[in-house]
Image 1: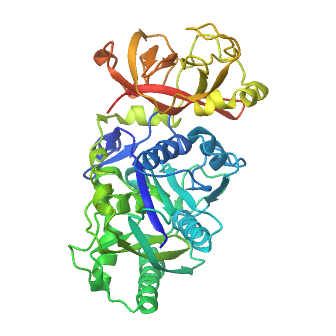
Image 2 (image 1 turned 60 degrees about the vertical axis):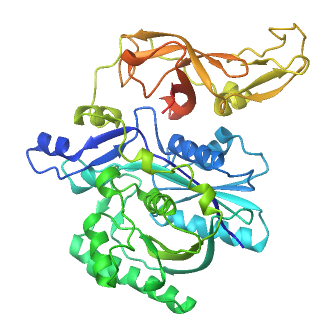
Image 3 (image 1 turned 90 degrees about the vertical axis):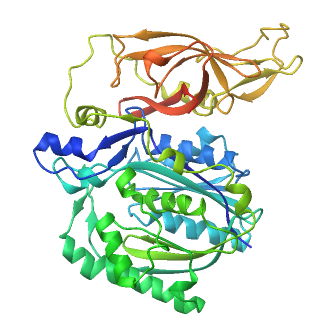
Length: 473
């Protein structure tokens, strides 16, 4: 029995109200808000956060990592490899990017399921994440949100078995973007609905029902992709779905999160289903993928901790000006402070475990952990003074407390003021670190902190990632 063994989700804490957008352009902004990735977040950092959440909820070591996105930070470089390094997966794991379509997530899910079912892998993690941009004053600016979700596919302690699947492809152009385009382009709405989206979704669902000899009424929950709430409601009406069956698409709360959207809806659905309930799960984009999921008795244990409901509302509302600045959509005054030194690819390679996975060392004699400082390898134990007797020790998953901090009003950051300081890890170890997702006025010594993977800056086309600390939510 192969299926979903764990699911994790990540939504940034920032929200941009649609009314805020409408005020700027003198028109209607609509209701609700969209989730906005922080100034130091992107597709990879959100994917890492979702993957860690999935692992913490019961995901085991994996044989593969498949990342689905349409907004990878590089046009030519594997994002899944960076992500697998940050999560500290074993090096012999398969890593691959699925991209160029909003259906990349369900395509990756099908590949992972086939691999596990065939026995070529024991477990495979599928992660979907997106940070798509909508052009100013356009409909997509209001609807596109940011987020990530991760599924672990395996045979052990399955919470939702994959009973069947059915796929169709369709060379239909509704949403597209070229190498030169910063924003997605869209065909006319009625043409998309009547010629592309609605007939394709109806065909793939009817095909799966016929293949499985089931009726639409056999499903307690129906989860499917749509570009916005209007299109989502149109499909429900066309299929004559019972309102109680249809999973809330979350568009009013977080927007359309691209490849991650349908997985985030699934996470919300899995919080509510009961053992033996069936879920119809459908992804769309250049065709469609449909799956039949059946919840098992393991779902009861999984539901003890919410996956996404506690993240929906967010914590901090931002202004439209902050949004434009964080996304690099308006030029801002350059810092008068000296520029950062250029990234050394050689040193990043040598210290990749420290930089990407936050791996330090632990003394083999006394067990004291120490964090390597960049460019300096620890050779002597700070406690027992034993020399060159260390083993690797990961700090990224350790709890921490704030030891001290400072607020820097001159620090060149897109979310001033800058907050830096020192954290002490539970079990030992200390790190000088930058803080994020925090209110400088609410920082207190000894407050609980956790580590989060973030983008520090970009130099010569190279994205520099490292770990920051943030208050425990």
